[in-house]
Figure 1 (spheres, rainbow, N blue to C red):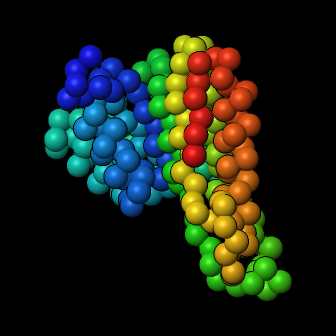
Figure 2 (figure 1 turned 30 degrees about the vertical axis):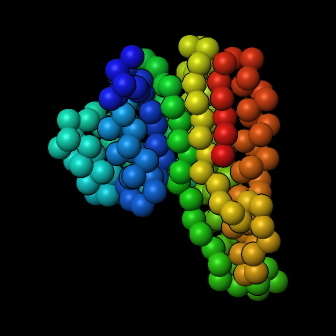
Figure 3 (figure 1 turned 90 degrees about the vertical axis):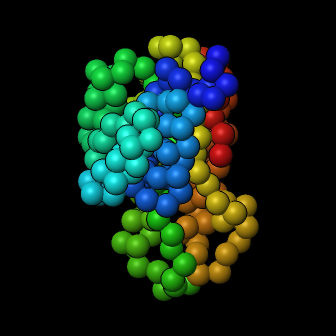
Length: 186
């Protein structure tokens, strides 16, 4: 194994890869040798992350994808399958904050927006990408959570609920996928 690039030959998908933590994770995975598939809603930010990876000799593929839309994840999974034939690492990073109103003032649409992105989007991602890992009997799923997934936060009930739910989803998926040699962690 190349100690400079221990992930050489592996394929990683990172959601929310256009900026912030997701872009940093994608750049690091590429530096470690993985071919990185960048998913997110905004083509221009994904292209910037891809360009940064390509400029240092890494491998990057851009697939625009709104994590709240299952059909877009299905398309992304089909592209990963046809382009690479495998998936080794799935990083579910896409997420929304939400520290605005106390719960009794929070609009139902805002509750749905946060939960659909932070929790349902991860469900969609695992639903479409886990079968590739199951076929190869290996893989790693990393779900980016938050301290809000363990602590009560005023004016952030929807965000906290999404992250507590994400933690529970991750622990359950870890048990379900363990027999297939797939690890899942937050």
